Amino acid sequence: MKVTNKVVKQLLEHYKELSILGKVKATLDWDLNVNLPIKGAQERGEQSAYIGKLITNKWHSPEFKTLVEKVQEEKNLNAYEAAIVRNIKEGAKYYYSIPAEILHKKDELGARSFMAWKKAKETNTFSEFEPFLQEITELNRIVATHLGYKENPYDAQLNLFELGITAAKIDTLFTEVANAITPLTKQIIKSKKYKANYPFLSENARYETHDQKRIVEYVLRRMGYDFDAGRIDVSPHPFTIGLGQHDVRITNMYKVHDFRDSYTSSVHEGGHALYELDINPEYANTPLSGGVSYGIHEAMSRFWENMVGKNPEFLRFMAPVFHAFYPEQLKNTTVDDIIQSFNLVKPSFIRIEADEVTYSLHIILRFQMENELMNGQIKAKDAPEVWRAKSKKLFGLVPEKDSEGVLQDVHWAYGEFGYFPSYALGNLYGAQLLNKMKKEIAFEEDLRSGHLYNIRAWMSDTIHRHGSFYTPDELIKEATGESLKAKYFIKYLTDKYTKLYDLK
Ligand code: MG
Image (tube, rainbow, N blue to C red; front, side):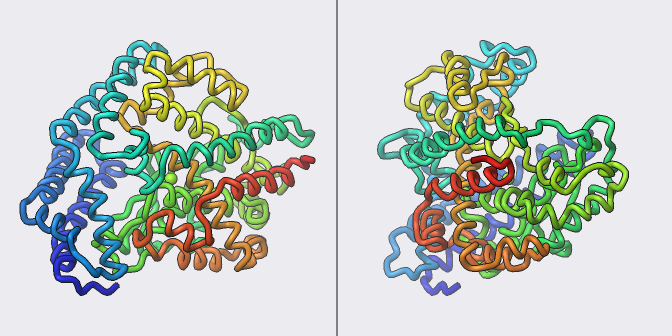
């Protein structure tokens, strides 16, 4: 990385402090999720908030603010310098465009509405949450006005997670996906080969945590995850967290009656971790460090989870490992059963339980709702009814209770709009990359022999090492020669599941 511009250099010196504070805060958060004794929670909250305040204060310090403004006037920047300025400008937008009282109101509303949502979900009474959802929508419209947008206020929210994307672009992609997946799902469920339940995954089966841990470690080593630059711990919701250039940790959880989740979750989180670990070390503590967007990050994790971890060829390679650890439990289980069970398609109301095929439909539903709320096409009071109608159209299923429908996720209660689409965009990015990768390396052969080295190296070279140098759109164009398309994901799913279920 070559930086010669004096103002950019000065800015980087200051930015390093922000980056270090961010990692310190991350370390506190990791500890909170993994180790913290319950009585330490209150103090930890204060410690974490204090570091958060130092970060905000740094952004608002006159010296730093002047530099951020000055650097945007600089001319003749090289590509690295221009990317640094672009990312700083985006970061600054959040801190400088939205008035402090609005940010404060958002925090305060988030806290109150979380409690209301929790009660509403527990008692299945949407009316408890309705006024909050309306207030959140209105506040997000105000935030959007401050952030700025061309056509659709929702674009401002989407851009916080995926720079350069618009609701119109997503709508085109998602409509294409929904039109293909809804009929594919029906075909799968009706197929002769379809089996919804497997006896080796019942309440009677026991898969000891210590065995699961060894399998997880084995597969992560095959992926090339460096245990000298990370570790695996236990937390209720698996996550990945970067505490430094050479310290990217993951967590996992273990279910005693089902050995599949700890495997797929760890491969998913391992995908996030490899991305962060492979970023050009010269970018550390600069605005080029870290993955470029939520969509690309989710592309990496979902690529490893679904396209590698649940690939039938790789599961064929893994099957003897499962059989070796669980000789009794899997005594009557064939390799085919293992493969099918990992790729089981089961439409459900609940997003977090969804399979690879129907997952995107859950996201499409939420994307449409957020878009319609932000544009005033629907009001909060209509949300449960609209949810049911969309659910019927996309899944052919209607949840009986709002707690399994419009109230199921916490995201809106926190006031967060624009995050959901990242998950489905990740699926699309991943499939487009896979299509290109298959032309350049022997993907299926590598999976059959369990060699993941070339796959990681390809991804590292094409995506990981660039960190936040390119925008998401530039990155996918650089990698595959075209902007994001839906057709690769549709083809990937159709090919995989046609083969798995002998569809015509
Ligand atoms: Mg993830």
